[in-house]
View 1 (cartoon, rainbow, N blue to C red):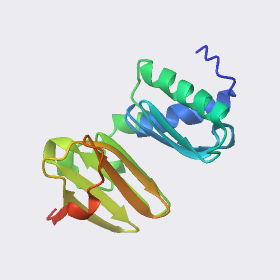
View 2: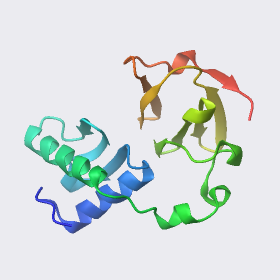
View 3: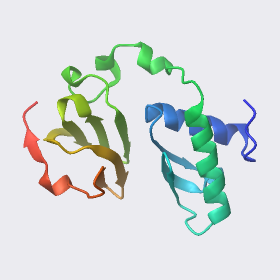
View 4: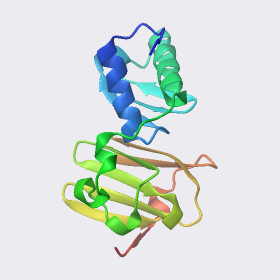
Length: 161
């Protein structure tokens, strides 16, 4: 791979792994060369070094380029979902997943479901007809954005597994 963004091979490998965890559509990462903790989605990046606009532009370019490359499934996806997943197997493979500390999430658009794990407790939420475009976990808080730009986490109804 010939990336001209000035990052080390270690930082690039970290970025690739973050993209794989986000199914190529988002990435949550924490690496010093990438500005610390951050999140990338197409056209948007947030980094811990928030006022370093030059670094922010380089990180955005790196993730955008990596996301455009053909993806190979990580080894963990070649095994049974049930053996590595914390959400109910019946939900299948999420379009987005991630987390921070004891908070994790996985979004399943086909079944209109957002699975949230806090510690060892998993709850399922009905996303109804909302088109979820982004989810982030930060400081043990979950933020869910929709195509209309608003966060609707408080509107979600718990549902049975």
